[in-house]
Length: 254
Ligand code: PGA
Image 1 (cartoon, rainbow, N blue to C red):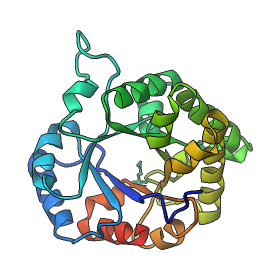
Image 2 (image 1 turned 30 degrees about the vertical axis):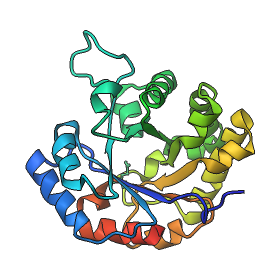
Image 3 (image 1 turned 30 degrees about the horizontal axis):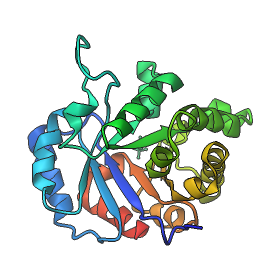
Image 4 (image 1 turned 45 degrees about the vertical axis):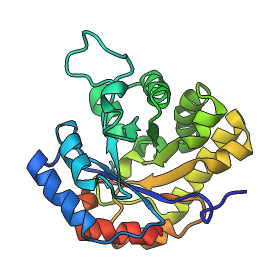
């Protein structure tokens, strides 16, 4: 059974709505200068307007590019949207289902499912974000919410698509709040997510899925979180805007 030792760790930088193309280029260069360990898959997710410039900076290196957003239709009258084919050749990963997209922009489980399928069809890798709100955790619904979010997407995937997907467990109350989940909380939720994938596709597929923790990951708390069995890396927001802090997190995942 694959463990942390056999699944390649993956640390993704979610820059969110930060950095102009020039700032993104500078930040990507600073991150490259950190000599990151080759045993960790590093993914930079700049805003759409910086995807090509940041991709140029990391071209020929082991660092991959991820998009923060995509629409599932292939083309047409969808003002402001970006299709998977527009990302192909620039990005290899796409974050989907981020709680900010769900909460602020009304994305539903069904939207996340359609996007994830489109991402796979284009040969890209989704980073499917799931997680409960504080209210849901306090009322004891964490497992129910996560199971619904994960199974609605994963039941629609082929076993191969499922196994090659990345999932980010991101409790909503931990995102951008400075209040990270404890290693126990993260490990419990991630174990539950893996079990949910196993119910849909069997344990061999579930054991291949890389599951990150996200939510106020910092250079201080990363070691305790990332050394836990089953936690295969991190999706990093705020701390990814600082090259040295981000590098410390990547190192902790190695
Ligand atoms: P944060 O964001 O690290 O700033 O909490 C994580 C995320 O939203 O992906």
